[in-house]
Image 1 (tube, one colour):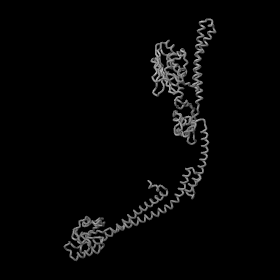
Image 2 (cartoon, helix red, strand yellow; image 1 turned 30 degrees about the horizontal axis):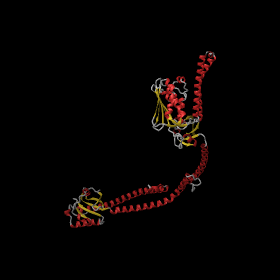
Image 3 (cartoon, rainbow, N blue to C red; image 1 turned 90 degrees about the horizontal axis):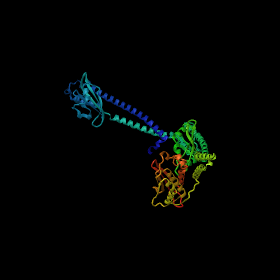
Image 4 (cartoon, helix red, strand yellow; image 1 turned 180 degrees about the horizontal axis):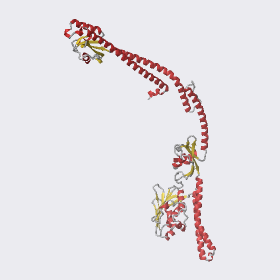
Length: 609
């Protein structure tokens, strides 16, 4: 392909175009001229040969040759005179002639064909001539590869054919003449093309030089150099183009300067905003993102992604915005387990252009995590605490009014009422304590006090603390600790509270005579696994997803009667999370429930992984 690179220039194309046009024109003229000349020469040659043959046949027809009845009547003098006549008329070395009698036998020939005398000429032209046809001519190539013009004429004596004249003229000189004319024509054509090419180079330079200068200026403008100018060499179309390009360069330089200034302002504003900003094109793909947006979304590379991919939202939202509708909604980006949940308010606004309509969208991300947390906590706290305190306060009020109405006068009844009031008061105290405990976890103020703890001893102590309740319901409790597990580095008080909450629930919801199994082992990932399995009534599947929610109870009436606050499992989950572990619950109604706590193994004095 490198061979054709020089022909990619306008100058080369102009020269080649002119040369091709001249070549085509000269070729057409040459073909017409040569063919016309060749036809004219052949026609002239044919007329000449035909005239000679006609003259010879006419002379022989009116001479003694035509009046003889046959060859036997011809004398020696007559044959000699016939030979002399043929030799004189066809002395040209390139032309051969034969005189034939009525039978086609050769009577006399030119000097070069004396060996043919007495033989019979059987050619088709001779046969036609002996039949009286006078128009007999054709071109042949003889054994010596010589092209000849052959003509046969009948010799007429009155109406009688007494013989024929056969003439074969060589056309070699004619075709040599045509070849010389061809060579002269080709030489002239090459000279004309050479001169045309030289003139084309000189003349095309006047066109291509300004274009080259214009190309250099375009390259300079593309590289950001606006100080150069294209020379204006005339007032023709190229000169006008050069002048217009210089004006365009000035305006483009001014526009770019203004644009750069505006971009600097915009970049400074976007970089220092507390809100994240994403700008998209007409198909919703991000083209601009500020530093705050990258930090909020946890992505270094945002450009090129769609807004729906960045924010993990439905495509319908951005589609409606690109159709010209504004929208506002909250999103919660996906985070890992050890990261804090975030809530963003996203405002989508279309970008409109006067001549094209909506050409993109702006997404503004405002971090409302703290505000949402405060609002959610407030609503949840007010709703749950109001709900949990309503029952004991109502009971206390009722029994207090009963005492005030005269129940104090009856000591047994008054003592029972006072006991109920005391029980409900203790229940509210437990509720407040649990709420304070959860509040410390929510505010990250709860600190773990780790110590080396014997696992088997810890689990045995749990069983001892609930021995009275176990005996009252005839429940069998069994502790099984895997070999190799001795001591772990945990917050003993916190894990005791977790196990107490789990075992307390197991006792509450296990029928009399049931069993509870406390096991400790090592999981597949090397974590300490503590499990409490009971044979209780189990938990319906619809409640499993909410079992660790605050104030959630499967059987609300029974839970309150048993003194539960609905916060035990929530507190247990927070304590386990503070250790960096997880708590899982599996249950099947009528079979039992298994609560499993996975705790990471931490060395003494070390931090959790």
